[in-house]
Image (tube, rainbow, N blue to C red; front, side, top):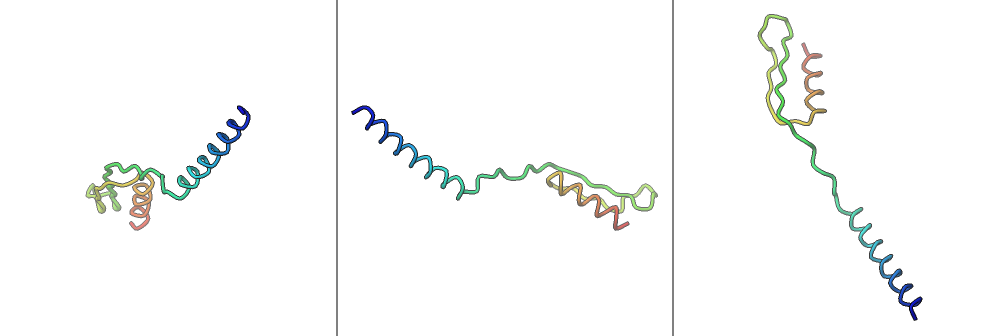
Length: 74
């Protein structure tokens, strides 16, 4: 009798595990990107006046990409 109970409990637990895994896979559980406040300043001609000056909340990757684009557009 104990073996039957264990087998049924295992089948029930396995089914629940599969359903939970499916639910997790179908739900977007990724955390939102980490935004930080950045100020991007670029002086293109070296006169001490910033030709580009942008402040905002960006991911570090986007802030770096914008800084590179600003430098390349000088």
